[in-house]
Length: 351
Image 1: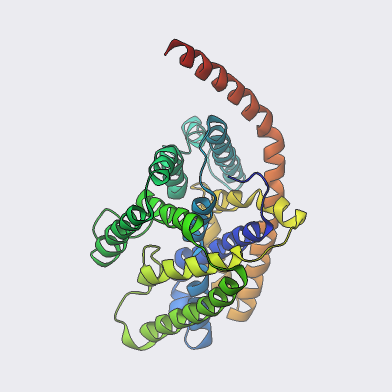
Image 2: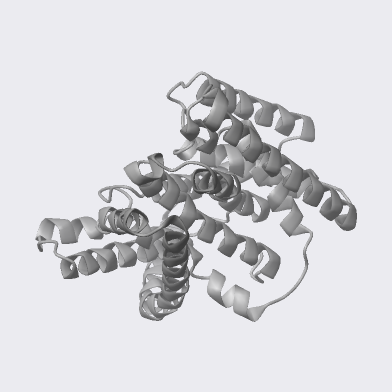
């Protein structure tokens, strides 16, 4: 992975994470709300239009990982654990301040983000991807282009046909490791074999992404208001081929933008923390309950204004908090990495 952060990709990462906030607000709070169910016209359709744009974030995150390639090292796994454990404990302590009862068992659970923490499906799936990435990368390195295309075809068949259309357990909703592996391979293929002149790619991806996402929103609205052929949630599934296509063209558009911004890069370092805090099992119910209450109490226009302010304040507040987290955890990470390196060196000498 390139050590120099590319600001165009970091900007996409930030925008996708902000989109994730709205996506979870819509699916977990708004969609199930009786108040929203009673809405009609603009205030019923407005969230659907936004969701058609913002339901692409997880696929985009993994496309980024596939584009650069995951280079798994002990230090990266340690870093990943420390980030997750920090926010597991941090959100648990916050929950104590809003009324939860202290428990040593719950505190211990906060230190086990990969096994005991509920709700962090992406954390567990991404850990699996990190652990298997060296094997995937080695296989990809020795594949011909034709063999890689066969693998992609097989993954489309498994995930988007058997998973999305046939609802088989291997990947029926896109919330699992199989979806991440699927998209990672697509990202690697694009990085290795996409050979289109940048300005031409920018032009066509801009046109196609706008048209495709707009059509996606129109079909969604038409189905929701008139046809009722499929459930609304079907459009949000990440293994939906149309949704995946939209993620790819938007991602490719951002790859054509070239600029450097230290501010964007600085904020983007903490992007993952946004996810960890707001979907934490300790704060999830309170977070969504308060957002639903705001929508129920205020007129829609006012409610959207308040929710937007909350999102912006939370978004930048947590991004800044993550730099404090890094200040605390980096010395621990370096010590653990040094310790692991010594153990690995000893093992190599004995083999």
